[in-house]
Length: 429
Ligand code: NAP
Ligand code: HSE
Picture (cartoon, rainbow, N blue to C red):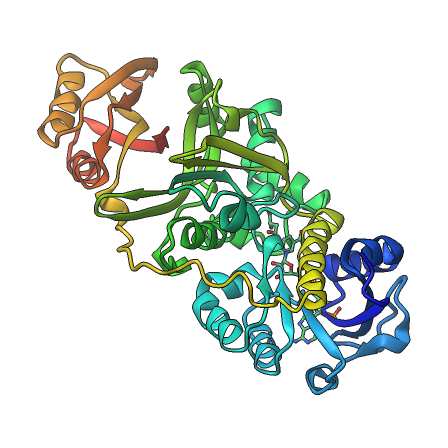
C-alpha cells in the first residue's frame, strides 16, 4: 500500500512519560508506518509547558509552548493529546476537532467526564477521536469492544484496570508486606504517582470502568455514576484470612447490564484462587468480557508505562492515518445510542466477608446471627479465628445479599454492646 508517499503531519501535546514514548516509536518506525498506512508520519510540533527544558532524544526545533502554533497550522492533521488532566486538555481537544483535525488521546480523566461533549464535536466534523490508551495501557480493549465484539450484546465486564493497586496487593499477599511498605515499593519502582490518591482510592479504575461501560452497554456512564472504594483499608490480616478461605484480594472494576439498569463499581473483592483474574499479578492489568454470542474473553497485559502506553497510542495513530489516506475519517462514531439508568450501589447484590471482634461468651454468636438474619443476610461460613481476654475474632462470609440490607445489619452492630469491632468488610465474588 503506497499512496504516492503522502506525508501526514501530527502534533504531540505533552512530552512526558507517554508523549516521549510515542515520539520514539514514530521516529523508529518511519518506514514501517509508510508500508502499514500508505503515508509518512511527520511529527511537526511538540507542545510542552516549559520549552527551555532539555528533552532527551527530541529535536528541539519542534518544541513549542503555544497551542495556537498547532491549532492554526492547517498542515497538522492529527493532534495526539498526552498532557493529561481536564483543562486545558479539554479545550485543546475540542478546538482541534472544531478545526477538523483528527484526535488521539490517552486522557481517561477527560473522557470519563466529558466523553459525550468530545464525541459530539468529533461527529459534527466527521473526525476520528480515538482513545485506546485511556483504558488498560497496552491492552487492546476499546477497539475490541467497539469493533471486534460488535456482533454481541455485552453483558458483563470485570477488570483489574489499575496497575499500582494490583502491584501493592500482590506484594502484600505474596511477601507479607504491609500496605505502607508495598506502596513505598510501588513508588520506588515508578508505578505509583507522587500523589497516589487516584490509584489507591479506586478513582483511576473508576474512570476506566466508566469509559468501558459506556461502550459496552451503549449508554453513557459518567465517572460520577461509578461507586469507587480503594484499597487503603486492606490489612495483612484480611489477606491472610482470605487466603485461608481459598481467596485472593484484588481491586476489581465490575460492570454489568441488568433488567433495571447498569451496575458499575470499583472496590476490593475476594476472588477464588482458581479464577483467571486471581493469577494476574504485579502491575499487570486484565479485562474479562462476557458477550452473548462469544461467551467469555480475557485480555491481559501491561496497563501502564512509557512504551506499553505508547504502543496503544500508536495503534490509534496508525488507524487514523489509514482513515486519512482512504478518506474515511469519522467512520466509527459514538457507541451510546441508549439511555440506561445507572443503579446505586445499595441496589446491587453481593456476598460479603467481614471480621467481627465480639465478647467470647455463650449466646453472642446467636445474637450476631439473628441480627444478620433479621436483615435478610444469610451466613455461608463462619470461623472463630482466635480468642484472648474474653474477645473472640470471628470471620464470616455471607450468601449473596442486597447491599442495602447488609448495610442495615452493620448499623445494628454499631449499637450492640457485645460487638466490639466490625472490620475487613470486603465483597466476595
Ligand atoms: P506526564 O509524564 O506528566 O507528562 C505530561 C506532559 O504534558 C509533560 O511533558 C508536560 O509538559 C505536558 N503538559 C502538561 N500540561 C501542559 C500544558 N498545560 N501545556 C503544555 N504542556 C503541558 O504524563 P504521562 O504519564 O505521560 O500521561 C499522559 C496521559 O497519558 C495522561 O492523560 C495519562 O492519564 C495517560 N496515561 C498515562 C499512562 C502512564 O503509564 N503514564 C498510562 C495510560 C494513560 P512539561 O514537561 O513542560 O511539564
Ligand atoms: N496509574 C495507572 C495505573 C496508570 O497504576 O494503572 C495510568 O492509567
